[in-house]
Length: 322
Image (cartoon, rainbow, N blue to C red; front, side, top):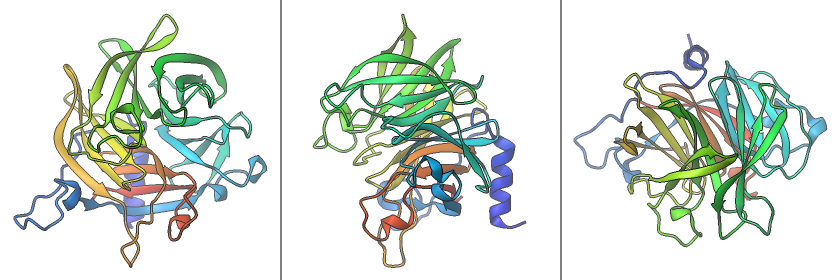
């Protein structure tokens, strides 16, 4: 079987991304200059399995552009949110065909998408309006049709710099959303790298209310944070993946729910570069697990520079080297 076939076979067998085994760490090398994943400077390179432009998979009647902002695997399919429409894309894991759920072309401000084990979807709305920096959460039904909108108790200095990632989980019988801040320390673009923050939200009297703030390891010194994904390990912890658009990199670690916190060992990955060493994956916005070592990601529109445009508005499947 080809590498593509093996990776996709693993992916199909392990969806939804709520079950799995421990995630492997990088292979350590005695040579201090060798890539072993122990730091950003020695990050491993993700191996591309397959990728495709979203416009080749989804109907063009809803517009020529899919500004992908979030992705989640559920029920053997991949669900993709875009911030320029409320319709959710539904794509098979082999990236051969797709369709759109209910919705319309509009400024949805959907910045992340996650799913519960019983088939409900949650889309993170970055802000209520351009003037108000308060995040909201849309609940969607199994067919991705709109069900309801709830407020969060979070507010941000800038309306377009709020929650950028989300992941659903259940712990001790209670439902939570992990909400990833786009900027370091949940503040502005000038905040020091290595201050990644995740708010633990629970629904209290109809409002998604912060229960605590979780810190990402300082070693995950990304310029920004685009999305996070979880996959349950056999010991009850979760493998946690956090992707950065501006750093074109991914951190892989572990989430504990008793006590709550992100822990190591950490493994760092970068996306493949051009033959000239230029960053190609400039606008990665969403990530989900397809299996212990396979990830699906989506990219938003880029700044229009080369070679960034080659990978923009696309869906990608990557294998972690090990």
